[in-house]
Every structure is written in structure tokens, then in C-alpha cells.
Image 1 (tube, rainbow, N blue to C red):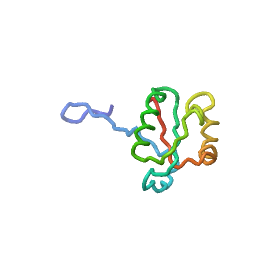
Image 2 (tube, rainbow, N blue to C red):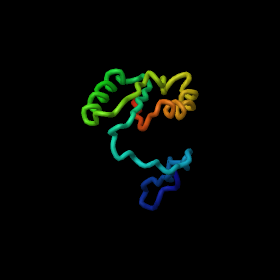
Image 3 (cartoon, rainbow, N blue to C red):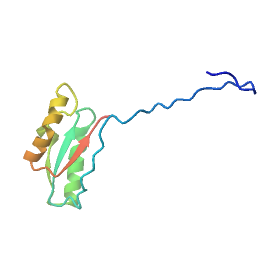
Image 4 (cartoon, helix red, strand yellow):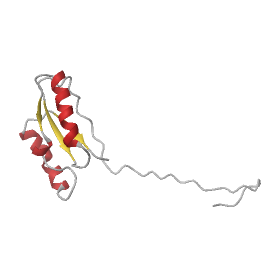
Length: 109
């Protein structure tokens, strides 16, 4: 608190809690025009109902895009936990080797 102004009301210094960005921004890759004929990989942190939600999402996407295919979250492992850093490091190669075109990542935040 700084000295009170003439009105007798207190005056406070203001600080901004933000800081410079801690990550490097990159240009985004173009979005897919359609999911038709694409392979979608599911990623999950094993924290909130992914085992219930991914089958529903798969069913609904398949009904809209009959030739879409899926790679289940089990193929990739847990995106949260003790080996999270290693799993994320392996992820680009894992997605590429499975021919994944798009990813749905479920997180229990």
C-alpha cells in the first residue's frame, strides 16, 4: 500500500500476475477438410470416463463418416502418470507408425 491520497482513501500499487510465455508458439497445421477415410487416434489420461465416452464418440463418428477408422487409447498408453514424459516423447512416432491422421485427446481436468 502506498501513501493515502488526499481523499483519505487508501491507494494500492497494482501488479499484473501474467508473465512472458513459457512456450514457443508454432504455426498450426491446416485442419482436415473431412474425417472421411481418415484414421483417428484416441488419447486418454485414464482419469475421467474415457472408457465410456470413446466408444460413444467412435460410434457417432462412424455413423457420419462410414469409412473412418480408429486406434484406441490402449494402443498409446496413459498420457498422465509416471511415464508421461516418455509416452509423450514416443507419441509422434507412435501416431505415424499407426497411420493416424487426427487425434482426440480426453483429459479428466
